[in-house]
Length: 129
Image 1 (cartoon, rainbow, N blue to C red):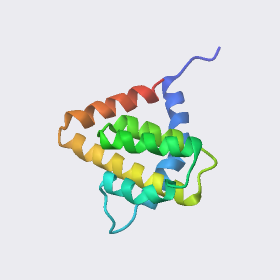
Image 2: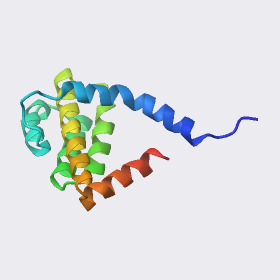
Image 3: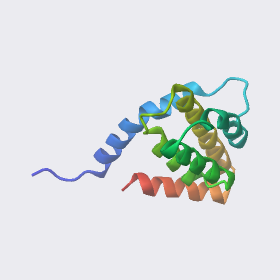
Image 4: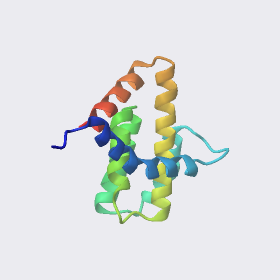
C-alpha cells in the first residue's frame, strides 16, 4: 500500500515552480531598478492594452504590491503567469516584477521585518496545501 509523503508533494510543487523561478532570475534586468513598485510602474505600459482576465490580474498584482502584501503579490503573479494569453513582453515584465518582490521580501525578512516574515509563513502554508 502506498503511503502519503508530504515531501514528495513538495518536490512535485518545486518541480513545477522551478522553471518559473529560473526564468524570474534570468530575466532580472542588469543595472535596472530593483524596486518592485518602480518596475511595476514601468511595466504598466505592457499591460495597458490588455483586456479582461489579464488586465484584472495585473491590477491585482499592482494593488497587492502597493500595500506591501508580498504573499498576495506573489500569489497574484503566479495566477497571472499561468495565463497562456500573455504576450512575451507581459511575461517578461511580470517575472521581472516577481523577482524584485521576492528579493525585497527576503532581504527584509533577513533584517527581521515582521511583514516580510509573515509573508514567508503565509506562502509556506499556501504551498503546503
